[in-house]
Amino acid sequence: MRPLEPNKNKGNRDLATVVGASLILTLLSLVCLDSDLGAILGFGIAIVTVVVLVVRIAVKRPMLRAMRLLPLAGYLLISILFLTNYTLIRDHVRWLFLSNVYKNRVLALPAPAKSELKHAEWDGWGFAGSDTTVFLAFDPTNSLVETVNMRPPVRSRALPCDVVRVRRLEDKWYAILFYTDTYWGQGDCK
Image (cartoon, rainbow, N blue to C red; front, side, top):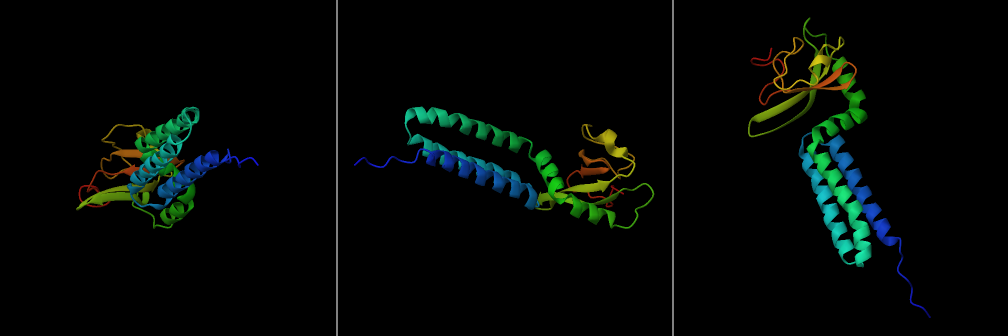
């Protein structure tokens, strides 16, 4: 009787399972976390995935190692690109999944002063009294469109003060990154 051959597709299933789980966890970190801890979590997931796959591949035959290291290297490269563009990706993924919630929240606000945009807190992070805030703003005239690619400090008559960045999420909807310890409507930002 011949011994049973190991399942040749098991390695491919393992790879697909680990990569799939990693991508799902990364997507959840983008949507659900309220801080940039998601970037660290996403990168950590990628590193753990790569280590698990390298260990798994290292015990295989040399030819299989070479064939499996190429997709692994691609996965690591994608993870590094993800980390370096985390805020851009996170803003757009959150907007894709949560835009209706935020739109309703902003549009339900009372009408602002004549020159002020309707806005709500979109994101924020900080440590030891240094807080950074990103606001979601509804700009019915799209006056902020000219500020989207500006280098900091970004100035606009539609904004109460200089800001770090204005990112367009959709027509008339913008994510505005304020300087650390600067908050819409407080201090010099009125």
